[in-house]
Structure formats: structure tokens, C-alpha cells
Length: 249
Image (cartoon, one colour):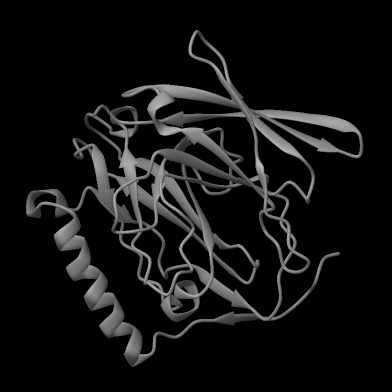
């Protein structure tokens, strides 16, 4: 049931400044220097994030689309993405994207707009994440989703998110708010795929309850892959789909 709580707006402590400095160094090691130009620019001012005393109910279904795990392993997360060519404008106005980070226990959320500048470099790209809640995120798993368009729109197109300085794994992880119900993922085409999602239900404060793994090798390089999901709710099958857009290798 919904829980109404006051939101704690974060103030950046001095200790977090050092953590951000260390993360910046890690980004330098993660990417060549030429790749650190301002291709992806934070458009939200101030940075929008909140820590709640207790979990808050969400109506979103897809909470994360990631090529890395959800963190919570004691290490400070480093936000990034696999930027597809289709999202890079050739000129004129920037492309707007939305980055949402939600902790598994539902206590942390951040929703921020970014601009992809014309002629931005594609592929693995770091994203500025000036969080004041790094201590919390180090100890709590979180799902990350990066979508094209306005943050207030219900998204259909996703780019793979990165939440670690380590390279992407062999699977794309899609985290679903399935309400503890059984879920499955599939793709079509000659090289189709189908699998049951892993149930990650917990008793309290859960933002996502299913983790669907899709082989990264089956994502169309430099194009869009449609993933189909089924969630069985009260003996009724709910179907929906998303498009995952990836850059060329």
C-alpha cells in the first residue's frame, strides 16, 4: 500500500566531495581523454534526487535496462551509457534524454534530464552524476534506465545503462516492477530468444521484483532490438514491449 512520507532533500557533505573526486579519476581511467568532452550535458538544475524514510509505491513497470549489475557492493557507482548513433543529432537542437536511478528498496530516486549534443561521440560514454547520496548508493542496489525524450513521457526506447567502471557483462539486465508475479522475456526473428525472469521479491520496500536477462550478443549492433515481456497478474497475462538501441561496435 502507498506510504506517504516527507522527502529528505540532500545536501552535499564534505566527505562526498572526495568520493566524487575519486569517481572522476575512475572515469579518466575508464575513458580516453578525447572521450570526455561535453557530449552529454546535465540539463536539470538543481540535480533532482531524494532519499525517503520508507519506500514509495511506483507505477512504472520497467525500472532499469543495464549492461552492468545493480551495485550495492560497497563501491561508489559510476554512471554511463552505450550511446547509439540514432540518438545523436547531426546538427541543430540537442537530443533530450532522461536518466532515472531507483534503489531496489525504493528509498532513493533520481530523475534528471540530459542533452546529447550534436555530433557527440557514440559508444561507451560517462554521464555526470553529481549525487550527494553516494554513501547510500554504495550499500544499496539500484536500477538505472536511460530513455529518449522527456522525463514526463512513458518511454518505449531505451539505451543500455552502465553503473560501474567495469566493462559490460554478457547479459542485458531488465529490472521489472512485476509486483512479485512471474515474468518472462522474449525476442523474435530468426535468432529469437525466450526465458523466464528471475524472481527477486522481498518482503518490504521493493521497487523491482523481477530481473530479466537477455544475451548481449543478441542485441542488434548499431540498431534497435525489440524485447517482449509478459507479466502474469492474477491469472491475467499483461504484455508489453520495449526497444533497446545500441551503438555500432
